[in-house]
Image 1 (cartoon, helix red, strand yellow):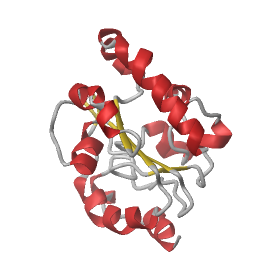
Image 2 (cartoon, helix red, strand yellow):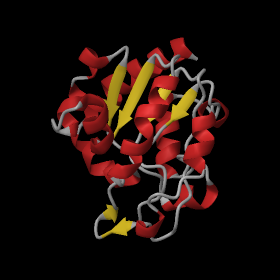
Image 3 (tube, one colour):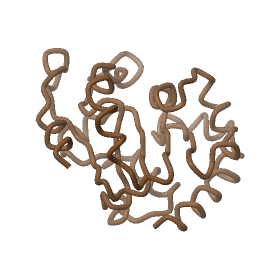
Image 4 (cartoon, one colour):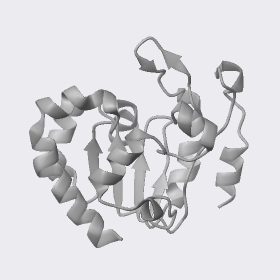
Length: 186
């Protein structure tokens, strides 16, 4: 897909990025599952490999897939709201720059014609893909109404331990259903 090369060479936000531009995306027109995330971490920025950190390990565990499956673009398209690391703020990474999604998503997402499931991770992806600012917890609770086409997940970051402890139902109910669905797709 030509658009992937175009995204990977993008420098539109570079002046505002403390570590410079290094757009990271994984997609194929054959992808069956779209992971719509926030923005790459500093680790991803350095390695060029999406979710190659503690968040990625937890996400792969939630999905019950191997690294080989996860990094196979024919199984998973990974399209964050911004393709470059936005930098660090006072309470974590900065929000994804809106210019990225405005510039690339409307051209890229329609090319993912085989996607049967969109996994929406985090509030910025939720607002974009669902058009709602309903709390993330409420959207995650609505998982039965969204599956089999979509599902909202909290960010798999280790920083979300408190949320996971407050919402035990998530790993008891949502994760098994999600894993079963993913098993039917790959």
